[in-house]
Amino acid sequence: MSLKANIVVLTGAGISAESGLKTFRDNNGLWEQHRVEEVATPEAFAANPALVYRFYNARRAQLKQDDIKPNAAHLALAALEKACLGDFLLVTQNVDNLHQRAGSEQLIAMHGQLNQARCLKSHKTVVISGDLDSTTLCQCCQPPSAMRPDIVWFGEIPKQMNKIESALRRADLFIAIGTSGQVYPAAGFAQLAAHSGAKTVELNMEKSGLAFDAGHYGPASNVVPEYIRSLIGDGYRV
Ligand code: BV8
Image 1: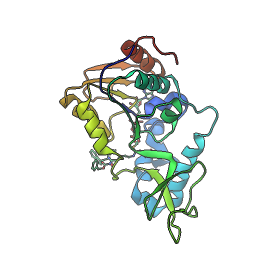
Image 2: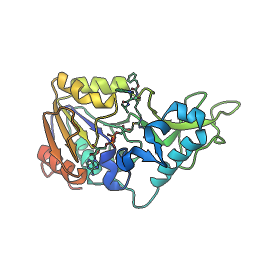
Image 3: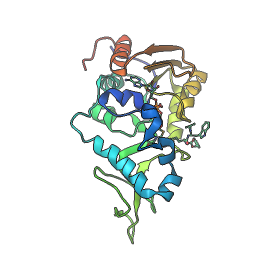
């Protein structure tokens, strides 16, 4: 069954948890005894680039592990996109590549991607899969410049905000999945969609505390396919 509606979906770390990727609230938000919010900043990169390169190299390497793959929630969102006859946009806060691997196409990785690097001089981005460090040089400048992870750090502006806000203003349905709603501007998307007349739904392990019209709670790999089946029927198998 297809769906004549404009849909915006926002995902957070919780949708990738059952694929084996830690969420930000796991380990009390710590990595190697550092608060993630302190490592994922331009200041941390300026003060201790080796630490920040290592933080992202470890997470990028994890994506190549055989046991890290899209789960039923990622696949159900790809099916929803195919069944949607209106405008569909999936906005992820995650920097992993699981939505891409699940087949989602109308996708904005608003906080960047582990598998991309950015030239510090030209700001051009390139796809990478291996480690990045201060000796990794760009191919776009003469003389070549050092590169950084193409990640949006705290205090930096998320990607494609205009496109995201315009989609939220046109949305009939806004679905937030696996996000604690603690990081802005993503945490404000449900309210913007609601003000524009959208129905808002939260699919999460627990209530995030943000206001939604409806919510379904439990592991994403159960709750998301179940909810999407309620929208488009059994017309898909994951
Ligand atoms: C900006 C890349 C200006 C890095 C990330 C005071 C008040 C309000 C805002 C601020 C403030 N002080 C500073 C700010 C701004 C700041 C901010 O919001 N800080 C927070 C900490 C207060 N924001 C910024 O700096 C942003 N930029 O504001 O620029 C601007 C903006 C617009 C226009 C002009 C100017 C930039 C923020 C981006 C930072 N980068 N990621 C990296 O990945 O290393 S954010 C990072 O943390 C993630 O990407 C993610 O977005 C966030 C963590 O959030 P979640 O994804 O929700 O993950 P979390 O672990 O928190 O929650 C997981 C959820 O899943 C939980 O609810 C859990 O119950 C659930 N779950 C777990 N398992 C499952 C599950 N659900 C279902 N199934 C399961 N199995």
